Image (cartoon, rainbow, N blue to C red; front, side, top):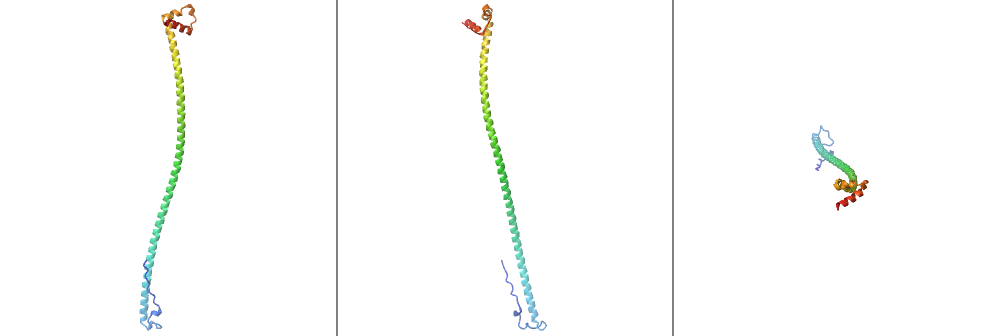
Length: 181
């Protein structure tokens, strides 16, 4: 920063000796000296005003720069706060989503276990039903064989024998075995 050195101010000691104690009317050099001092003081005043204006301008620029930097920092701080808040909200949402997913996973695992148990139960029941159906099919085949034998000529003859009036399955089976020989 250039600080100009002010012009030294002249006072009564710097005036010519003939100016001292004499009136302005009698000494023609005194007004010239005063005019020179006035001119010098005016120039010094103008120089100081220019320096003050330049300093005020530099100060205004520095304050504007500081204000701009402060505002930028405040905006950046607001962004950081907003980002942090968004991150916290996202983390909370992620925690909720994870809890929901864990709950859904537990329900899915339970449903899968229930489904496996139901499949096993159905398979067991189906096997039981299949065995029952096979038993019924064997019994039906036996009954058909009996009915078919009864409709054969030997079965027809057998039916009308007087001792056969009470027909039982066992007696039909025994007669079928004899006839098969």
